[in-house]
Amino acid sequence: MQQTLDTTLLVIGGGPGGYVAAIRAGQLGIPTVLVEGQALGGTCLNIGCIPSKALIHVAEQFHQACSHQDGSALGIHVSAPRLDIGRSVAWKDGIVDRLTTGVAALLKKHGVKVIQGWATIVDGKNVEVDGQRIHCEHLLLATGSSSVELPMLPLGGPIISSTEALAPETLPKHLVVVGGGYIGLELGIAYRKLGARVSVVEARERILPTYDSELTQPVAESIGKLGIQLYLGHSVEGYDPASQCLTARDGQGQTLTLEADRVLVAVGRRPRTQGLECLDLKMNGPAIDVDARCQTSMRNVWAIGDLTGEPMLAHRAMAQGEMVAELIAGKSRRFEPAAIAAVCFTDPELVVVGTTPEQAGQQGLDCIVAQFPFAANGRAMTLESRSGFVRVVARRDNHLVMGWQAVGVGVSELSSAFAQSLEMGARLEDIAGTIHAHPTLGEAVQEAALRALGHALHL
Image 1 (cartoon, rainbow, N blue to C red):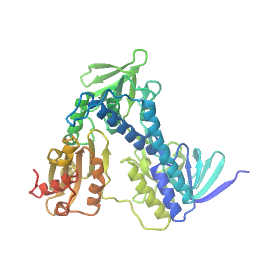
Image 2 (tube, one colour):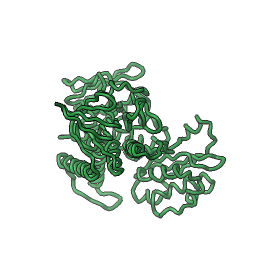
Image 3 (cartoon, helix red, strand yellow):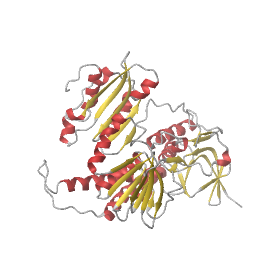
C-alpha cells in the first residue's frame, strides 16, 4: 500500500526562490517539504549566477596578469602566466559546493524535509516522487527556467549551452557565441580573457538590445578592445561539425561562414512548465500567470521566480519565496517592489534600476535626466577604469527619483543603493545631501544628483 506524507507546504524546486520559501516557512513553524530533482540551489547556484561570476573572476585575474607581461604603467612586471583550466574549474566547483552545503544545512536547521527526486504532479494537493505520495495544503511551484534551444543548433558535442561553458575541460581555439544578450556577452568576454578567440553572432542590430545604446556603448568599446568580433544583424542557419563551420545570413541575404571548434548557444531562457499541464493553470504567454501575492488561478497553488516570467532574476525569486511563506503563515503581504535591479556582469558592468529615460518619455513623465562620468571620479581612476557613468532619472516637478542606470567598473555594487533610494521614495536633494565616502565610486551617484539639481561639484 502506498504511503502518503502529509505536509502544510510542499515546494517543488530547490532554487533560490524555492529554498528561501522553505527556509522562511520553517522559521515560521510551517511543516514544509521541498522536492528537488537535481541539486539544491538550482540553476543560479550550480550552473548560473555563482559559477559564472567565479569564471569571470578567474578570467579577469588571468587577463590582468597577461597585461603585465611587458610591464605596465603600474610598474608591475611578470613572466608569461599560465592557465590551468582544470584547477580553475575545481576552484569554481569548490565555491558551489560550499554554498549548496550551506543551503542544505539551513533547510535542516529550520526543520524542512528535503526529498531528492523528480516530482510528478497529480493535482493541486498531491504529488508523487519515486512512488511516494505527498499530500499538501499549499503547493508552491518554483521550477525555474531552462535555456532556449535552437532547432538548427541542437546541443551536443561542439554545440554547448551555458552549463557546459561553465565547466570546460579545455579551452576552444575559436568560440562563437550565438546571442548578444547578457549571458552570451558575460561568457564570451570571460573566454576571450582566458585566451580563446571569440566571435558573437546576434540577430538584432546591436548587443544587449534590451538596454539603451548610450548605456551599452562602453561595453561595445571594451569588446572591441578585447578583440571580440561582432556580427550584428545575422541570423544563424546551422553548423557543420565535419568542417567545423557555422553559417549565418544577414538582412541582405549575404552568407557568413565562421570556423569554430565550439559554439555557445545563449539566446535566452524559458519558464520550465513541463509537467504542470495537468493543473490547467492560467498562463501569461509561456509563463504561469500570478497575482500580486504570487497566487495562481488555482486556490492554494502558488508560483514564483522564472516560472512566472520576466524579470528572470534570482533576487526576485527569493523575495517572492519569502513573501509566499509569510502569506501562508497568515501575514499580510503583496509583491509590489518599487524596482528590481538588473545587473550585467560584462566588462564594464551595467546596472539598470527603475525607470529609464525612454520609459519616462513613453509614460509621458516630465523628467530630469543627468549623468556623471567615471572619467571625473578619483576612485575609478585608481582602478584603471575611467569609462562609463552614473545616470539618474527624476521627476521635474518634485525631484522624486524614478530610476538609475550605471555602466562602469564595479557598478554592480551600487545596485542595492539604487534600489533602496527608490523604495524609500528619495528625492534628488536626499541623494545630493547625503555625504558619500571619498574616494568611492558612490561619489558619482551623489554627483549625478547634484548635476540634476544644476550644481555638480566635480564636473
